[in-house]
Amino acid sequence: MPGSEPPVIIARGSTGVRGTTPNIRRLGVSGDPHGAITLGRHNASSFAALSALPPRDSSALARSVRDRLRLAIVLEELPAGVRLNQVAVAEQLGVSRMPVRVAAADLVVEGLLEPLPTGGVAVKALSEQDVEAAYRVREALEAQAVREVAQARPEAGLQKLAAVLERHEELGGANDTQVLLELDRAFHWTILEATDNPYFSRAMVPMWSVVERAMVGMLRTVPDMFDLAWREHREIAEALAAGDADLAEQRARDHIRGSAAKFTKSISGG
Image (tube, rainbow, N blue to C red; front, side, top):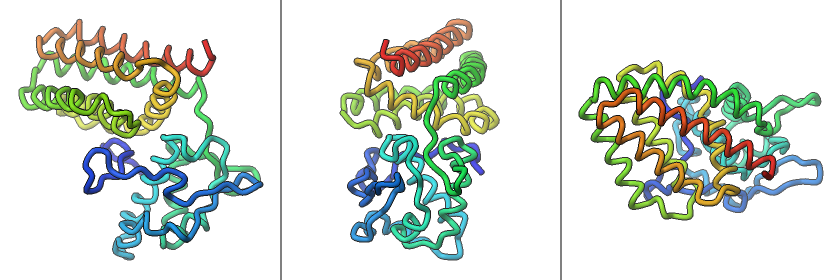
C-alpha cells in the first residue's frame, strides 16, 4: 500500500530528472486484436534494473513493477480500456507473476486499473467525476497546508521551495511531459512536507495519480498550461514567503479550482 511518499512517475536513472521514458515502443508493447497488451521479449533490456533486484525482496520488486506501470498509464502510453496481460508483463520484466499481480492489485486500489467481468484488469478511464472528487479533497488539504506553512514560515521549507522554482526556470521550457510533471509534483510536495505533518502527504498520495493524469490531458489540450500553472505557483510561493496565510490559502484554492475547470473544459472540447 502507498505510504507518505508521492507516487513515483519518473524512472530515475543516470540522466537525472528526465530519467528514462518507458513508452510503448521502448517497452516493446504492442496491441493485439482483442485489446490485450503484449510486451515483446526483444526489448527486455529496458527493465534490466528490475530483473536485477534481489529475488527475496518481493515487496521492492512489486513496487518497481507498479511504478513502471503507473508511469505508462499516467503518460497515456497504456491507454484507457486496454487489458493488461500480466503474463506478458512478467515475462518482459523477467519476474514471476506474483509481483505483477501485487502491482496490479495496488493500481486497482489507486483507481488506475479496474477488474474486468471476464477476469483480469484493464486501464480505467479518467472521468470528470474522478477529477472533481479528487480535486475537492486536494483543495481542502492544500488550503490547510499553505496556511500552516505561511504561519510557521519554516526556513528550510521555504528555501527548498525557492530551489524548486529556480529549477523550473532551468527546465520548464523543456517539451517533456515527465519533466513538467516532476516539477509540478516537487512544488506541491515541498509545501506538504514543509508543514512537518506527515499526514498531509499520506492523505495526498492516493489521489496524486488522478492529479497527474488530469495534468497530462491539460498539457495536451490547453495552450501554455504549464506556464499558466507555474505563474500561479510563484504567486503562492510569494504569499508563503510573506507569511500571509489568508492570501496563500486563497491563491492555492484558486489554483486548484482553476486546474479542475481547465480539465473539464479540455474533455468537453469547450
